[in-house]
Length: 326
Ligand code: CP
Image (cartoon, rainbow, N blue to C red; front, side, top):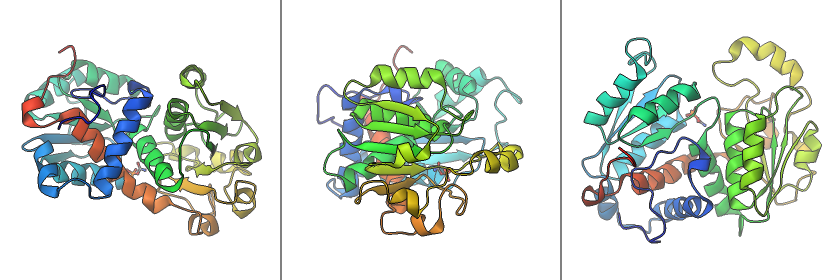
């Protein structure tokens, strides 16, 4: 598709980390996502954007939102998806990652991958000649961060200058939020129990990217919540870490997003949770079902944000391009 801003060119690009995009590129994805959501593009024109293109979904873990949103997004753009379930490929076991990358590159136009290991994700991207989109690794969940920012954009007049308070595990969702907030000029305060803070290199990177906003990591959830425009919680035990669940329930006690904590945020604060949620653990039923919760807008926005991302990295047939440097 013709990109509205001539300085924005995402054709053929990987999206492994939020930091693969500049702030104005993220803004362009969000603007296009909103345009799709608001029906500003004719469905027939949308279906020309990725006509005839195939997106492979390679997942090593279960998914509801990520899988469905990518499948619907590529279909809305005129292409189609092939879902490869956990166990179908057994990347690195049945055959080397580099062989999977080169085989898929001969058959499909992009890959969306949910792979725990960032090293495997990077190897896949290194050997593929098509764009690779990170659908969640242990380090990041960048597509979730795009949808979260699209949701904030819908509910707040401007992104710059807001405060986002994140309460919970400094894992993939948190780390992508730190990077995207830094790039968009949003103050972020992360509160995690000792030992569960985000990786120091992500904190350093976020601080290096943040020109107009702060990035703070603390162990007191009330510091994250106080005066926040956006409050965000995530599960205490991510998929794959179930053996740690009992210990984590003890370690995260006191880090729940409940009504009392929400009351110290701004009066018009919104509540995000990427879902699935464990009510009674990281968030109360009262908060997630309450009037400030926008978690189902957030879930829906996975579709629109990713549809925009795919439109910009795939482009129409005449503009298809091999991945940079391949
Ligand atoms: N939020 C999220 O990534 O949901 P799924 O695990 O269901 O894809």
